[in-house]
Image (cartoon, rainbow, N blue to C red; front, side, top):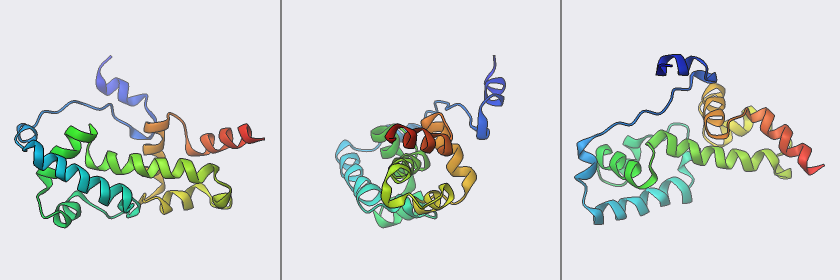
Length: 148
């Protein structure tokens, strides 16, 4: 079956990940990559910038006084993903927590989606399904049933 045929079977217009090679990824010095990795982790994760739906690689590069190619190279080599997938992974991690935490029991899926940084419902559902293999509603129901 071709990739196009495989992709037709996936919900939410999810496409299979394809490997890409960009020569500039190997040009970044290890020391600089380590330094940028720590700074990216601090900004994206510790400061929870992933919650900002408008946060971009360009904005991150500007904050770190570097360029988006270096940001992309570090994220690809150290996190083994791209910028938007990195943000979405942390957004989904927080969403998973909110879906089962009593403090957020009154929040519906759309409110959780917005709180963790997704711009719209469709992007949340697509990212959630890609990472978790099920819908947010299905996950929440299953987790809450386990607690009873």
